[in-house]
Length: 373
Image (cartoon, rainbow, N blue to C red; front, side, top):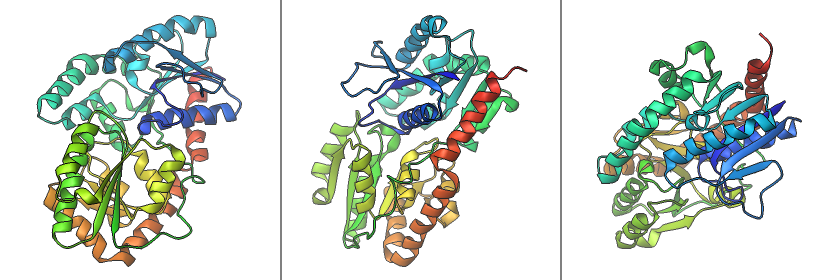
């Protein structure tokens, strides 16, 4: 099967965010199964691009970049004649015609817009998503052959929007490399109790909340540290917060890590903290769980199912700094129970999120939409 997989900006050495990792792993797995899969993305071509990757130069405005890639790729599809287009973001499929289209939905514009803050940047983000993004997203979804959503909550949002009938919606989550992300032979105990945040450094992730919670946790006498891995527009602000924090000696910004670097970070940590306002299916949580870590998550949609109602982590219903600090203090106080959460997390991820099983499901969707009726 000839598959054109459309993605946004891709860095194979250090993929930024779960959606990028989903695109890379799905593309690699499809090629490993013998499919003629081409990954279309934008940005300058680095020296390390593998065969089967096509890059296009586009503008700089995020929403418009996706639409421009969609237009330019569509002009190339007549030449390449793929059997199906797999778009890793609805706007990437907005201008694709004449070929079956499967859209991967990691989160909806409505969900992301509702989760944006109310500061100047948050208001601008809300307007951009609702005015520029949402109409194009709806049109792309309405025209697609099938929508693949990363969890039940996102699928519910897509069906509720009315753009896609439920018989064209499937749930296919992201997967985890269980060999790379596995529990260390021995995890160094504390103190200090080592907290880890991983993700794009953007306001939506609320890593500033983790810093504030660490301050309160240490003020209570708990010896804890916080490492934040990732890059993004919030890096400067987070660095300033860390520098003037009462916990400044216990906060480290790790920058962007490659896969092996992430595996090492998970192996050193005692807990992954997810203080986000909104998530689709956070692959960093699945990677951490595969590495034997429990997860402390604020109440974004789907968080309770992720942490297994307390079996694999802790759901923080009061997502204030004091509320998060209180939840973390509870975790630190019972290391045996927390170790059991980490062990449960590894078993759960291995049972449900191995990439081989995930790609079976994705492959089934692609074959279904390309088979004669």
